[in-house]
Image 1 (cartoon, rainbow, N blue to C red):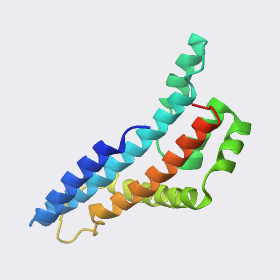
Image 2: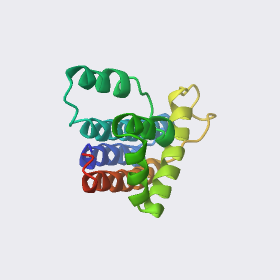
Image 3: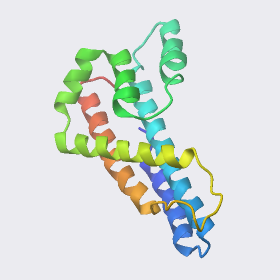
Image 4: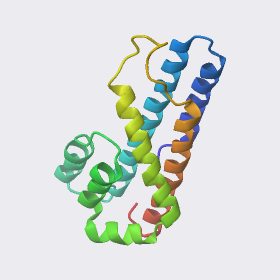
Length: 169
């Protein structure tokens, strides 16, 4: 998985600017950027776990297929639609069932909820621009995206740990 240190550093820097800003436009832009950064980290972390699961692939055409047809053609970070689908294509349904059976149910549920909330926030922010900061919709503070990050990180870490135990990575 991609280290969490850098995204936490980036988000903390943006949150600091958000808290210091006296201009509503800037607070909105900082809040939007934190959500976009966190969503990017989640998607890249999921892709990295899939790449690691495919490290045992030997055939050059299959290696190329993993990258060009599975990872590169997956845009998004929803668990079932994107991540689980890639997992099934790389390690198989039986291994996915075994993996998910080992996961901490509470951690996994919190991760799924945080992914859904982050996805919803990201979609609403990514498809808008700020025309009039004083009359536009309110945006959640960067700390909200950071709480999503913490829950998603814990869930992905649990997945990574269990993939190691099962020798899937």
